[in-house]
Image (cartoon, rainbow, N blue to C red; front, side, top):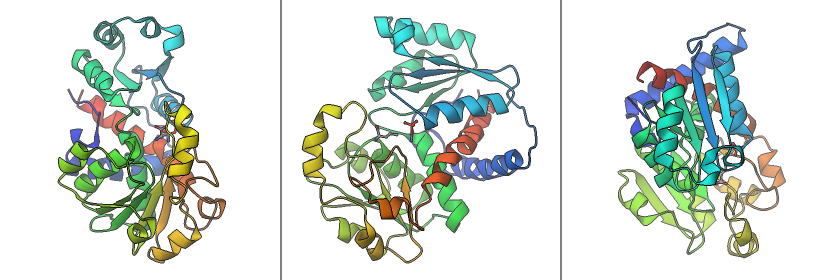
Length: 300
Ligand code: CP
Ligand code: NVA
């Protein structure tokens, strides 16, 4: 049985096959082809944090695949009343075919997977957001072809998305330049344990130079709301704007996992401009996760 807690749970070959499959599934969907490989299958979706894209894409994916999903929030389940994660994992996985979990500590997702009898998907933890990377990689391939050997620049917080970009750099073989303010670098262990070509910068312009893809994310992630003001001050020189994009290669793309704060981590001109592919990126959550669900159920 396979889980998908980080990008490292799949091999490079499996990931590349999955991206190609996502592109095929997207075409089939657009052509109106009915394809129901998960008929009568159920996905449990545990959300301890808010979501728009992740929830809509997983629910739609399950419906389109002929199955169904159950939305579980801590407010209306025993998870919110302290039922041990091990017990919840045993019970929930005994009744469904796959589980998706969005939570705080990454350890919690790992713990859930250890006691689950079905595949578990990480739909974002404080440390990683691997599903988003599947969509990002699909989007790059669709617009520009292979990302192998290209240069990607991460601007902003060394957060869950940044960590998944570090994993992606290793798995998809691109160079990753990370620009963060001091004190907001990605986790040292994740950087050190990565076989990827990762370089840390404290200046956005140096990191953006001759890049093929510029990516950013919010300055304060879910769970860090009370740090918003402090972070606005620390990150003020880390906005992706026209000047930053002009240092990258001419055909560079801009991505953001969304939700975005225009005027903070990205200027309106950039996110709503010609180099931005954020809407394709968001839509691809559906197609990439369909490929993931199909893969995990075949290997489940
Ligand atoms: N990008 C992303 O995961 O969005 P949601 O928080 O809306 O699911
Ligand atoms: N880093 C953000 C990503 C949201 C999809 C967060 O964790 O809130």
